[in-house]
Length: 423
Image (cartoon, rainbow, N blue to C red):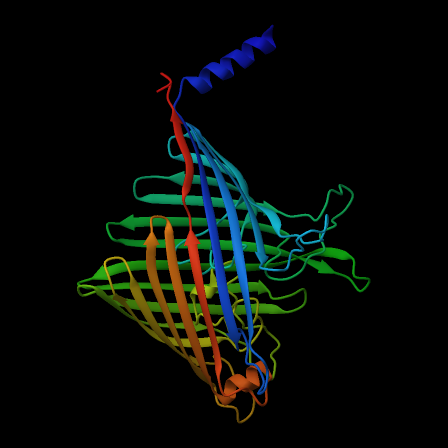
């Protein structure tokens, strides 16, 4: 009897409050032509081309004190899945997000499960939406959101299987942490804001027998800010990393960024500089190479992804002086032109100039119909001798370029709000 009364009470509460269900799609095929993306290719190497595609469905639910999202996706390259074999071994289907957020006091909530964690300009934490698979974390967050102040406290603990006797976690690298804790705070003042982040990551250590043997820790602390000054908008960040670069090497590294943008009429102009510290190629007793960890790194330091996109860890760092302009070419279309001047932050070696090269990026955006957008991009790397030394390519091709075209299709397939009256 008690059980029946409890179920009836829960059912009554659910139907007596407004509830919203929605289903959204995110389908984006992208053609890419590569002749030197991510690294220099040697002279005589053939270019590559492929079509990548994300097919994602987002199921969302929202009520008075609860929000939930389940997101499933298939990420593949056209042709890499056999058409008629019953089992092809392709592991392209995955659960991208599955989280629930529960409100328990005014402004306070808890968000649990697989989720995107993204803050500020996405330098340290980002959703990595450019990559077809995106980036997620299995984590628990305690959140507070006020009128002008917010705070997130995050926690994660990762295993590769259930084993209550000992740790079985055997994945290494910057992106696969054993434990994570962080605090993120942000304060707004009109159009200005500033945030503070403290992040602690623990990574698995191994003994000589390649068995899990403790954890080493890396800390990242810093701030991001933005504010207007007349007609110019400034933004910037500064982060410091310390602790351990690996089980035996101490870490002391930094990142600094400052950008100014000016937007008269239908054009935006920007000028910026970012410095990420590095370790001399000749080596050092301490690792001085900053790594931006879980950010949307494709957004920074050139779209050809020569730096910090699955590469350039524990290297010579980077100085990136860049300028950009965004022109409005129609009612809704735009053209971005961006140039980067790259130099190494640390020494590349004896008698090797720190200048790495110059990259030019061009991106055209054109909405076609409702919920459908076309993006077309082209990038060209003018590599210097320093880049050849950095990437280990002695005789690179004279042309290093990359082009792509992508359709972004993201319609809402279903949305309905159920009210207590059934309207």
